[in-house]
Image (cartoon, rainbow, N blue to C red; front, top):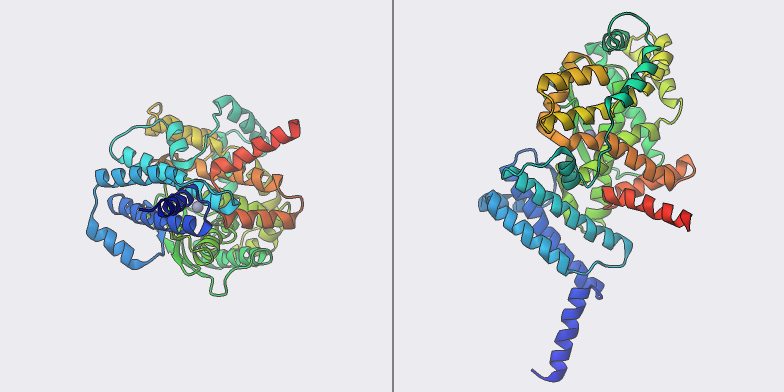
Length: 441
Ligand SMILES: [Zn+2]
């Protein structure tokens, strides 16, 4: 080897390692991403439900199936891949840097999940951190007692509060034969409101199915090419407010829009194939559930939700619209109780509450019916600390969007940019700290 050739080689190697050559760096990341997709599909083979969506090459799935790697193989590959990523310098360009961080953190979560499959037991908080990159807050019973006192005045009577709330809500149940018409109108409105701010590909579409006997109340199955299947569980009576929640959360600007933007912005435009697979038990889910829940108030700010429910949905459902004002006030207070679900999940999964205790806690502090509380514990059994993604996720996304936007139009812009970029849950929080530091300076 001549000194000149050695020097050239050294420069090439240095460039590949330091990422100073963007083309080489991108190629390396794309190769890395391909192996990440194979790995996620491999975990999906041993853990049904882990892969929430996949629309990359079908041949990759076949290869993974034939490969039939076991948990130990997958763990070893994941750890190798993780170490390799540490050897690739973090690029300076913002989106490329986010991609780098994102892949690393998603891999950390995958490793933690494989370890859990092997019997490693994590506390609720440790699991939430490992899988969802977030630290759920703790609230004691006194915190919820204070909220309950405010609700008590809204539904006077002698029966236990949960029963009074359930009785009051009974008048807002959508008759089963009207469900389809009400949901269709709600989804259509969510879509119209979203499309005014977020352009979507022309072929974008969804299909709704009504199902039973599931641990969840609704689900979006993204099929690729901007198409979703939305399933609605009709096991329990469905209240009128569920229509907008479902339309926004599963559809617009929630899961369907999130997946469509990831596909369009990252997979199609940038060729970032890692986004063609969605591992459910990963930080991506906090952004997904959080943005889907925040999407309700983004699409229907202030009084707009009540107005649409009163003027359009209540007549379609054959529900007396007069009491909707009171119901909206109650709903706002009930939302403040949603962290009570996390407390039940934490205590139950950490072995400090039995199933019966958890149901009783949810009845008392979530003001659920016993049937709904039991369905909730089924959900906790299946999805564990995933529950934090709904409320903590919503609050993190809301803080992030509202901190970075001043008008409603800007909120939509920040929101759409968040959905079309690989931002991590801790990234939403860290920025806040940075901003606080800036303000202090
Ligand atoms: Zn969801």
